[in-house]
Length: 304
Figure 1 (cartoon, one colour):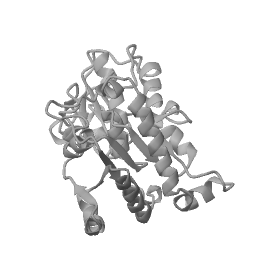
Figure 2 (cartoon, one colour; figure 1 turned 45 degrees about the vertical axis):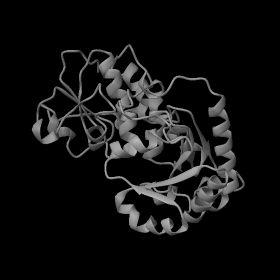
Figure 3 (tube, helix red, strand yellow; figure 1 turned 120 degrees about the vertical axis):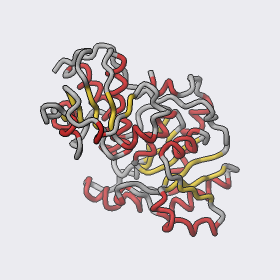
Figure 4 (cartoon, one colour; figure 1 turned 180 degrees about the vertical axis):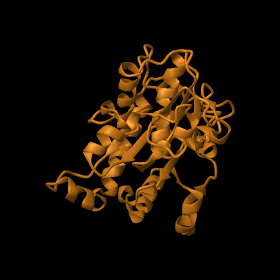
């Protein structure tokens, strides 16, 4: 399907933060090619100041308004936006599968299915005026949670990691969602900084004004990478990291050692196998690489 500038186009983003940020790669490329989509989804709404190229809509006000509705994954409201009641769902296309990175799958669809000519891997994120990059030069954001419990490293190891960072004269800062705070609030009694911010724009600002980000395989790692904050991501296995590692700014992944024979065992045992010293070694390597890097600051990473 070749999109034309005269088409009215909507892009319905998924609920997940990471999926939405990757979906915004498509939005950015549509804009670059003279198509002005209206974007739907809570991530785009919360971050509209960070994506100035994107026009954000409200589904109930736009029922049946669009010639073409593109969904990254099926949504509950996408079909209602379409005049025909049909949507173009990227997840149902063969190009969305395979082993390539998720960003590259979106780029492939933009070029070869939608016929866009001027295509980039960036999602167009721009840090708003007033947000000072790395304002707290020793702060390391730790994101110990995520939407999938099986992908979350253990609480005890995150606390041990925090103590190891503090011994390096860095300032670890735990970041959780408001509904996760009751389960984590007690770490303040151990001297840990803990924050729960209600809007994703506030989370983005906190991350942007920090120096590094460490977290599980989750959406906030993609947000940190979009902003250009050096990002260390903990993965249970290599195949997931190949497709889902944060893919914009400077970053690295840490995996458990390959000492068990099957993917199933690795998934069950990865939390035990991945040690604090191994994660600290990954962080030290990321920190050293960042100190020696010569690069423009980050809307470049995600906004080209």
